[in-house]
Length: 313
Image (cartoon, rainbow, N blue to C red; front, side):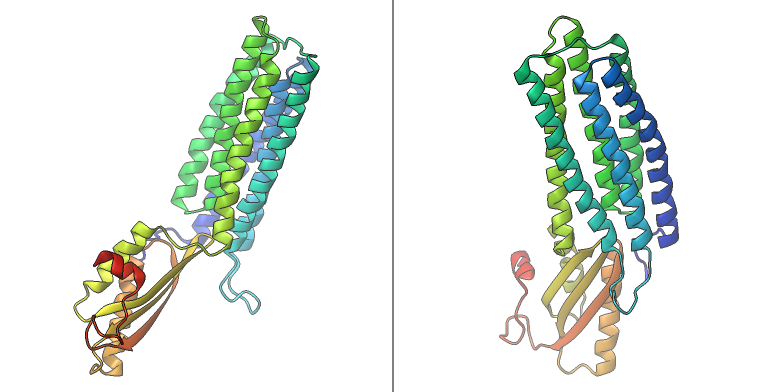
């Protein structure tokens, strides 16, 4: 059996934890620098950016908890495993991120309406510039790790870092503009930061919601799998095929029809061959359930085509 997932659960947990802890340490240092600078240097934009970075720390801690729970084996109460803990962590992160963005936006909007803007110190611009570089580096590291271990929670955290980099860019523009005499640009940059945060948070919310609702794998992958199965010389057709994401793992249920004259042993052998096709063509499959049904020919009423198969014909 040649499963496309080439990384063990233990290695997956180790790599995910290592990346997340590195980002936590960096984010704590950045958050302290940004928040203190925002307060001491009178910059609404860099203060908003600092609060955003604090939210990064909270989300990363949530991801570590998700990794820890998801690696637990099946038990009597959770017979499909605990992988959805990562999806829950990503979902909570999305809600938290959206709430942070709304709060930052509200605060910046109040400053704009009041007209009580201040000129930020030059050091705030340097801190924003350093933050852009560091956050982009964190994004690339977390995205690499998330794709390597197939963790949507870690990928979500990577986009959290990218949103922080974008917010730092907005903060830098606002600070420089304010120091050039356009003081309203600093709180305006804070408002732009908030919009970026809310947008990313909403997208992650939809992604987390879909995972918790057992969303299927991508249709392109599903159609490719179907083409592989129907090309099997002893599989007459696929009656039904269902997939669902379970955190970082995938469950696959398939009902294929074969010649009714086949023996039970023959049907059993075919089911194993179809199962191997699934493992060879879909990444991170945790479990495959194959059902064998008798069928005389693909066009008969007792051999109903599944809707995906109809699309291919």
